[in-house]
Amino acid sequence: MIYNEFLLKRYEEMLGSRFKEFLEASRKPLPKYIRVNTLRIRPKELRRRLEEKGFELKKVMDYCFLVKKAPISIGATTEYLLGYYFLQDYSSLFPTINLDPKPGEIVWDMCAAPGGKTTHLAQLMKNQGVIVATDVRKVKSLWYNVMRMGVTNVIIYQRDAREVKYKFDKILLDAPCTGTGILRRDPTRVRVKLRDIRKASSLQKELMKTAYENLKEGGTLVYSTCSLEPEENEEVVEYALSLGFELKRAIGGEEGLLKGTVRIWPFESSGFFIAKLVRPCE
Amino acid sequence: MRIRGKEFKVTKEMKEVIRELGEPYAAGIYMEFPSLHALITSQVNFPRVFVDDHAEQLFLYGRDVFLRSIIRKEADEGIVIICNKRGEPLGFGKFGKRLIKNIADLGMYLREED
Image 1 (tube, rainbow over the protein chains, first blue to last red):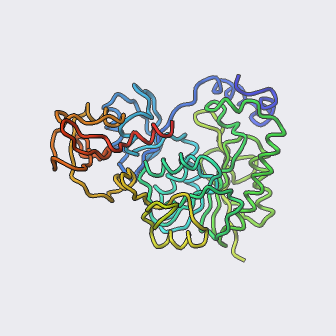
Image 2 (image 1 turned 120 degrees about the vertical axis):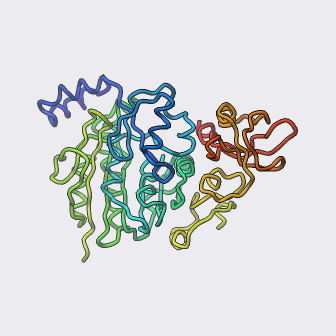
Image 3 (image 1 turned 135 degrees about the vertical axis):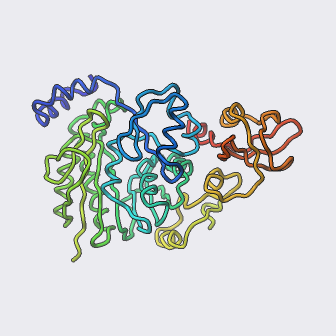
């Protein structure tokens, strides 16, 4: 079992009768998904090309496919190297979809590496406007992914997001977290304890404050984590509300413990939490 | 625009943001030859050489192109863009006597990250 006893007890309380289903899902490998880079190719065309090579795909949304069968590694095709798709969990598309960035806007991806959501933002913005992508680590991976995907509207800073001062139209805060929603993908995080959760929550609140200070009035912030822990999710959103944010209804899964937020349990994809917040005009 | 001593192509809007936030790690389109970013965003202009499927795979693993793998070519010498039979750019090469030397290919993104 990938979850320790401490975590299992928490999930049993939160899930109730669905806990058994959760345990069953946790024993299976997490399905793989690809996001089609519509800046470079149409989904239908990519599907045809990969199916010719023996891949079996199932459409789960306009530009996302579940990989049902892969004769070779899905990360080793010519199409991958050409930047036609990104390996990305279905659930992790929803933070960007909720932010709904438009061409011409100035958007900040606060914790951007390795770039799945940054390149998704660029895709929705049609490479127009500006994305500022910051991270303290893995910026080389981030930059490689930006280049491979043919993204042209990103500025990358290797910088702690808390040091940034600017006024953005929209902000994506996909915060560093304990990652308990992706344990099936990254079992190195199995030893998560309460003190880890508390530490992550504290950093997340600091980043939330930074986001508030750097967001234009009327601007939108999407907060997300791949953690299942309320201290890293609903508790951080409650802190955001105390700063002056207003909560808007997010989409992408079942309602979280706080009305309007979204919680995706790791049944068919990674676990995720999403909240959509607006800084009101004074 | 020069960033950390390298050439990048940035928009006016990006320049304004950079003026406020300071010198970034990277921005816009990386333009230093042989930039694959510039290649796939159609910023470079070299003659093209089209190669067969087998040569495509080898080239993406960093290998050179044997002249017998060429399907069609727009030049016989100098620097060229290596394309697959569909015309998709895979990287840069330079004509030699018996082969086209690999200068840069899209597989570098995977090899360098590893």
